[in-house]
Image (cartoon, rainbow, N blue to C red; front, top):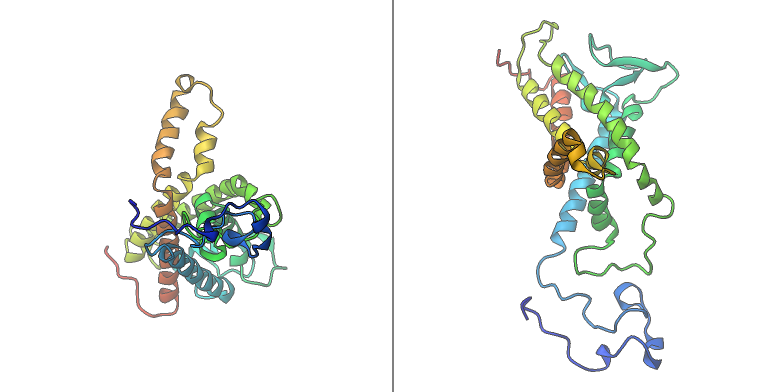
Length: 289
């Protein structure tokens, strides 16, 4: 065969799934009574498990790191840089940031880390993202673990029950992600100030923030919901040339949605960790001019 595998030998294991013999079959998933009686769990000979395992490891590393930084409530501002995990800062217990995103909308009753007030929106956007759904469904739940590899679950209910029915909120998280991206753009503009808040500064952190905001916008605008909002429900593209052009641009970005999802995730972590190192005095921001 073209796949380099051999068909299973004929015999009792290849009997039809219907008939009196199927009542004796027990098990779940691919060995369930409703499945064809094929002995191998799959016919793939490559290392199909490496992709979901690597995805799970990468997402787990981000979960551990972001949880530590979100609850630490410290070392997130080193003028003129503010960690993207803490921007905008919506509580009174934020570190004062001159000209920065100090928006005390919540007031003084909030006693926990201010990052918890804002991270729910970008994380909600990523958790409900179509690519990330596939990534963590396969990586953590083996649903399914890989193409042509059956999942080990008895039944499939899709996203029709709680909590997965909340995935339908993706479009609304997209709107929130747009606002957060605008705030992060403002923060990036502020990195052209020095530690004394004088304009005309360019440091290594400025370059990191520029790369990060570029990836953030590219990932956000490559979202499937964004593409549908721009060009969805149009009967005649010729009557909407501007939306058609924007839809085409969004479609080109959408082809790189997976790469942009990971690249922007890494860039956010790098910016946060860079600010952490500066705030803890590990080194001074290398200044270009």
